[in-house]
Image 1 (spheres, rainbow, N blue to C red):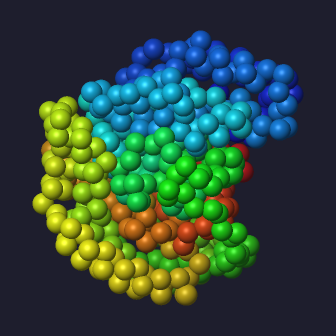
Image 2 (cartoon, helix red, strand yellow):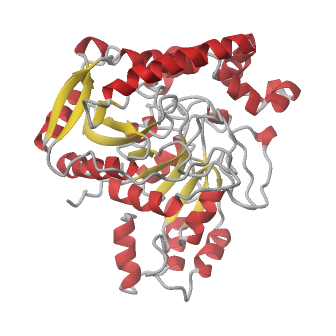
Image 3 (cartoon, rainbow, N blue to C red):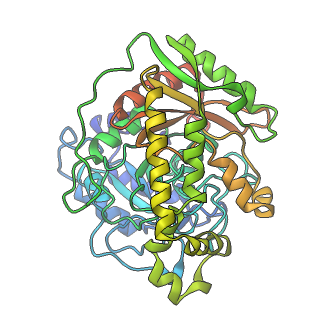
Length: 457
């Protein structure tokens, strides 16, 4: 079934489909088998029907996401359903849904389940879970990308129209790239994080996976709002048009600052993506990427990893053996940092922010590969830290530098694995990025996710 939001809406408006029909069909198509380890807790048919039936008699015109099915990363609360953060011993049952989830339900969307993730949202691989390594939607030998692993794969395989992930270091973008999806990392604070298990609370974002950039924009519009209960929520700033309808300048890292980690195909795929942007009216400008790379290294090599420890400190100290081994190694290493280390790193970050700011006087957006390569599950298991670090090369700096970013698919390797780029800009350029991503997708996309359904331009 084509689960694009516009397609479903047309079916509802023409009375050829009802939310109840959709839920029953989805339940049958998804079935009970979960060979790719996508789900931690699928909603039962009766649970999904309870949401579908609430829409009966309501105006489709007044609900922008009327009858649209969505999946939720299992570090985000859905009322009455356990939140595990991929750690069974940590699980709790929330009385109310996360603010962002409730806004989507109020807009007519139907939750269908909680998805697998790298435990406590620590990782970019999708293998760090006691619920099993989440497998790529195109080839189960490959990683799904993480930490929002199941959220991406569920959409790519046509089980949901969109899904929610989180993105602290790249978790809303890397899985999108590896599964031929659009992944939007909103400006920090644009979507409420109330009801989200924190990873690094000062940097966390709720992210959106969708089959198309237009769908992602529709979801973002419904989900965003200032939340007084969230101390990190920010009021949206009116977007000043800088990404022109015709003619825009995009920055590309210098050649010697690009990294593809021995992948022989992705360099050419990135060149092709640059040519696609030029064909859309863009002008490429080389930029010094070093301030961004140094900022990226701060995230895991500096004291920000201590935020991950602070988020689960009580649980970590009470039940250390309940934590996935690699996750335990990473978070446990945070205790070596002192308060003085934190201040010194903050000073360095401030200096890097100033350097990075200068770039935006010359460009409208920056374009990089979303990830330089993709790994098999076996490769990640053999060298989990290095592989994960490589996948964060183009992603880890985003929230430290207060940027908004959209990952968009642009091509495929010869083995059929997807490749994509990320376009980013300063905070609150979200809708402009999604509009540009929509143009890129229309120029390059042929199919929707891993569904095999054609992308209709």
